[in-house]
Length: 381
Image (cartoon, rainbow, N blue to C red):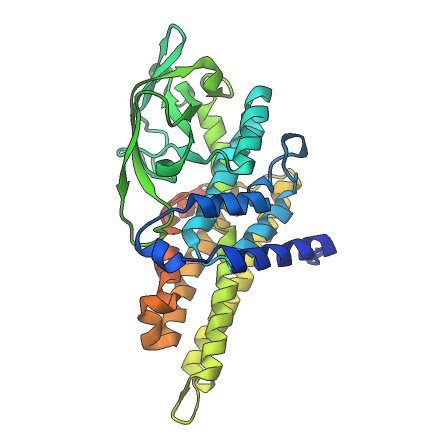
């Protein structure tokens, strides 16, 4: 297997790191403390082209392959310390744009993909409900047929970016008697009458990425807003979940690399008992473990990207990637705090923020417990 990257990919990676480092960390401490999403920063990264990476050329995108898009997301995570923003980018890319690319009509693709890529529209994925989290398809939201389309009624919970989104990808029952085969997907504009996104929750981490409860009260939805065909919701969601599991944490690889470099620098400079703390075996061992986690997580991510780009099945690898990257980022975040010691526990250093943000990865996009169940099932257990 060839592990080399092309000159174009390396230039792209360097360009993203330079842009993100210079522009996306401005005012981060204040935004994080006030749980503020900055739409101007979103537009800035959109103007740089970040949101166009996976959008086909014919719709104004760059048409990058999966491997290149993954590499660039990793670079974004290295340069941008705003984990909430990084998650928002990956979330829109893989759970809104990719389903439109895979299942949207020509009209939906031509209308929505350029707007999402330019940042004039922000998209959010809305499937989770108060009573259906890990049990994804136990939905209670219903889209009842009407004279001119459907009437959408129900509640979606813990929806990232919904508070600032213009477009929601919503899953609802159109034929309740048909079970899983009676679920459909809709592209719903947030300003539709009957849609309310007023309740935003405070969180432990990822605070610049608002998490919101969304309610629908007989919201009118046209036939043209359906993504795919009636009853295709499970298939669309299953495909979307594989993309999400595989790549929504790609930026964490870059964050882990940055975190490792900061920790090594600190261990070389901080002296106790007459020598740098990196000379103590307990500290050195933690840093070695951080490097090992980075390498294994990156290899698994790249293998999954290669499989998806090659059109090969990647259900197992996607679940393994989500599970491994999420858990290793938490472990390395804790090791970084321990190595920095007292100052690592201070908000002002930013070291503890990575740890708080990392915990969310154990939950969103399918919990680690669910990923283990998926892998066990695919192993025939």
